[in-house]
Amino acid sequence: MPIGELLEAKGKQGVKVRLLVWSDSLNVAQFSENMTPGNNPASYLSDTRNSTQRELDQLWYWRANLNNATKGWAGKWLMPGGAMDEIAKAIRNHALRDKAMTNVEFATRDFTLRQRAEIAWRTRTQGKDTERSAFTKDANAAAMAAEPSHHQKMVLIDYETPVQAIGFVMGHNTLDAYWDRDDHGYMRMHPQMGRNDKHPRQDISSRVTGPILHYLNENFCQAWDDATGQSLDAARKGLADEYKCQLKLRRDFDTPVMAQLLRTQSQKGKRDIERMYLQAVNNTTKFVYIENQYFRFPPLAEKIKEAAKVQFGEGRDQGKHGALHLFVVTNANDDGIGMGTVNTYRMLEALGRADTMPGVATLEREDARQASLSQQRAQAMDQQNQANQVIEDANAFLKTEDTASTRQWRADAEQKLKQATAKRAELEAEIKKEPQKTIQAMKIDGLNVHICTLVAPDSPPGKWDYVYVHAKLMIVDDVFMTLGSANVNTRSMQVDSELNICHEHAGVTAPLRKKLWGIHSRPSPSERPKVSAKNRVYAMAVGDDIAEAFDAWGQIIVQNVQNQNKNLAPCASLVGFMRTSEKRSYLD
Image (tube, rainbow, N blue to C red; front, top):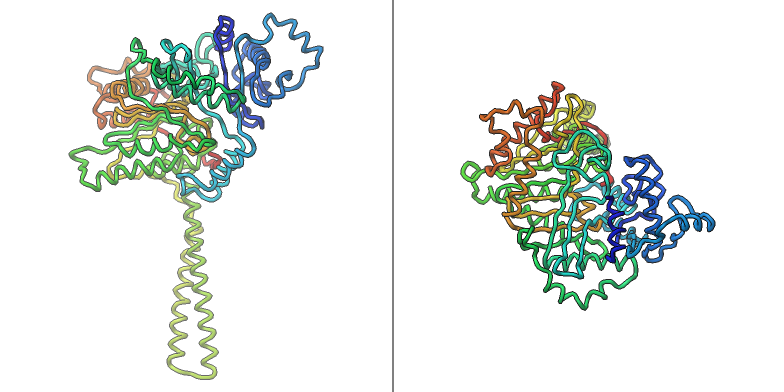
């Protein structure tokens, strides 16, 4: 049953449903990904939905909008793409068995023009990423003001019945494309049979119970009231303390942890997720695992490097205590990286892995080389001009007073002119040289780094399909864990509304890490018959010995490079990150 139909059914049973979604009033964002298919002009474009889904979506939103609670919403009688006249509306109403949905309130939220202007100013002038170029700052500011998003993903159920209340802090979007299974199969299925998007998806969400639901409620009420002008927060305030005491952990299916909710909420001055990420990686002593849709927030890379530098600078011995290890699973495809290739390159360059983006790396390094050479040439030209001026002045003096000091003055200037001329010629020759296209990985003392992406493990030979990584997860030392809606980019750290949860319970974190690493590194269907009992690589790749796991990942990555070069099937889902495109983009 589609979620929309389920919500309607619960409404008929007397359950109050409030649905709050982000909708871009400027109609920009919906053309890159339609967050409300069936409720806007972009719904008429071709997408992955079949005709039945399209009809269901359009009718569902038409009926939901009859109960649209959005503050100042003036479109209650508008269908997507245009207004219906009164006659057509009356016919439609008569044809519908249940006109407006019972007990279902629908609202959308967006950013005002004033908020967008503030976002542009703050993105341009503030933030942890101070090393961005002026052009990148301008591009970031323009893009984030044009398309800021309310990116939080949460569900709260039965909050007003505390004994059975439950919530979800999510990475998944509530769209059909985000449904997939752990096997990430190559074959695209009918929407009622399995994964229906163009590519498999990797994503993570969490189920929560207990007192933390109080804060989920607080977050939702604040957002709902801002969007609708209602007073849900005030209505629940009187019961908040009572509910908070009654919100018990559901020990029948959840592991008790001490958890915290964190937000990015620019309108409220909240950037807690950014602070959490930077603090958590600073505390690592063993490894950091990041699984994220994007990997382009250079301050995080600098903080990881700083943690390694401090530890090994203060007496940690790599031979005795081992290195720090960074494992990253992200996207190398256009869908995942296309809007921010330059900041992704900067992130990888900071970690010594510019070799994984050789196209952009070559251009960026050549730009930096040309800028440096041009600056040096300008200095040489200034030295030439100064020497010529001194020679001219000396010659003028010699016409009236021929002295040894004046001749020495001119000789010194002629020597400087000769040196400056030679330097300029040398620089101009360097400027004309072809750029260095061989990009090598750079070792960072005390820090070992794997940058990876995923493919469908059952991909046929020569037709490997990527798995789109949408997860937003970080694990530190098998103890700390955070997941939610926030990506590793400037947008999520300081612009969009985001919601994450974090905790420090090894009993939850370590098993999750092993499960995920098992999904990514287990032998593919074509590889399983070849795996002997003596081959420990796949077991090592998920084990507790992080150094061994790092080596095993490396072996799997190398094997998949060889398999791809030979037009064979992948040996596992895990592949090394590689993007050869020279396209440079600066919007994210």
